[in-house]
Length: 318
Ligand code: SF4
Image (tube, rainbow, N blue to C red):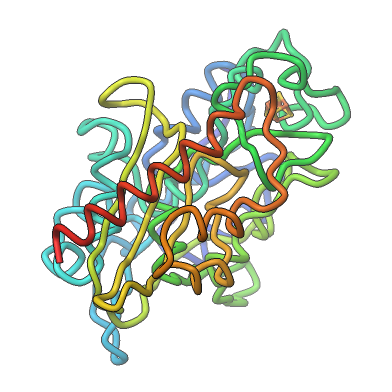
């Protein structure tokens, strides 16, 4: 690990200003991804701004009937919140499908959104990786790509996004609240928060360097039956090959987003009109234009079958 300096911020504005004033600075909260990346020298911040003492660890009801989740709410606490379990159950289920109990105790809401890909070539510093070192190439192209994305990729990067929580937030139409060093605040729809790789796979979100996530808000509950199904190579503590977040209403209409198949949580709202006609009809639009590799062609059919299973599960639960 390379040497770095450290400070503890006492307000969101102070934290944002500290990062703005140090060119090599980064925020740290749970550290469940950043510390691993620092040990491998994939990330080498010269200064860490600890945001753990900021008062951003509450889950509050909003006047419109939704919930405002502080950026520092731990994944365990969010999954256990009675309002989340009752009204936004897809989020609780997605959280509990992710990582391990120990990691969920440390990992925060904002950190979960900002975690980086688990592409093995990204973590192997002997391999070329455009995300780790822009312009160096992509070893995954022609490599082992069972875990990689099948849609939303580019010639520069085919990595998938690892979060389960973000897939549920996408289907719930969450918004991300931020603040910058100059005090400017933004509200970013989750659909626009993560970027596709295009020519710049190292830029993964729309956040500015000094922009601190302060909260994630959920609109009022949408009702329906909430299902999160995750298919992975072992039963626990593994990232998704494919995951499905679905909210199904009594008349068969609903919403669906996919994890494990794209560089960001994958949802195509127009495809949801086909929900009453079943998984095959939805997937024909949701994964239209997919470009799987030789190693991960199976994900297209796996996604359809996982959605079919989710719809069957929703009918049984209703
Ligand atoms: Fe790097 Fe992306 Fe290629 Fe993986 S898929 S090696 S993260 S550029």
